[in-house]
Length: 435
Ligand code: UDX
Image (cartoon, rainbow, N blue to C red):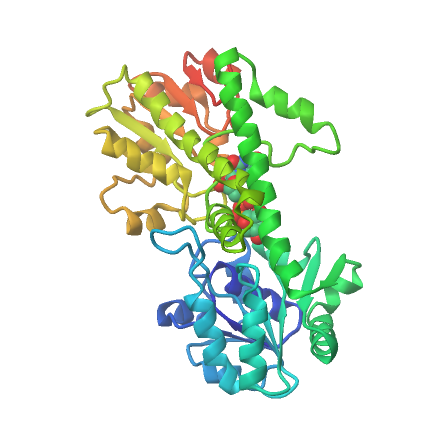
């Protein structure tokens, strides 16, 4: 198989498929990324990926190239390029998907299946399928959305919780289903639920899943806003409603909100696509979901400023976390990075730290001051703010931190700390929607 696009999704997919025994070529236009992958090195931090790449080095089943012509000879061709938010608009930018498919078509043979994995606006697969069949008679297109979570990407790819194929009618669908059946033979043998459907449903499954997750997080963050004015505790509230199996406790962690390369831009692109389809009102609530989410970043900034008696200028703020979530170096639309940037903009003397994301954050915001060592970052802080719940931060000893900081004030932007332990060590502890 070929995997076109070797970012978070494609690199993990390529390596995982090789691990399952397939013969894989990973293709990307970025020579730096390809050079690193070809050496068996992960170009970004994802637990387990580097080990997988190293162990596959001698297998002969995984190679990487910048030459799209090397896709020739593969039967399944995965499209795993990015679909970022367009600049200044809510809709998705399909430039990379279109370019990948157009570049691939001349190298396809009859019987090949192009498998879209990228998250796209509903209607894209239908359009691309026409390009594939017109340019390569006998080749077909399928849409096979990806649900992997960063931080668990390898495990999610090797053992997915469900598999969805969106296929065309008749022979196109039969051929695509047969090829994907071989690709996912291991997972299917383990009775992973499989849904074979049409293109539109497959495309919508992905955006609907992400929109639902985002809504769940914003719902609990809205409850946090109410808790803040009533003295209620949103964490206990989440525990209590989460015991209802119909609701479930997962994705009910209130805090600085969601970020990353998927949730924020996917829900905006979904709202934009619904408007194009004349059904903007059906998902109008997603704008509210987005607004609640962005308010939580502002709330953390406001809490820091309040803790500094409204005079942040020149005050030392230790920002713990830059990645959009733990176990990732991804800072795309990261609430943590946003908080560090906003506080710097307010004149605070911000020192930001993260176990993995200083490099990625520094490329985007070289004006920020970074410190790799957590304890050094904490030294002399007037306020500490935790915005990514890395284990290292959850396990900090409040007594040790208390000896380093200038003032014992901690803002827990992820509700991930033991409030009592921090208070017992003399800290003013401020959570998100928790008394
Ligand atoms: C998401 C989807 O989960 C995944 O299925 C899809 O394939 C890609 O998008 P990912 O972007 O890796 O995955 O992150 P996810 O684990 O969903 O977290 C997204 C954001 O929500 C993070 O910023 C996280 O900190 C935040 N979050 C998550 C909360 O604020 N509260 C929660 O309870 C859960």
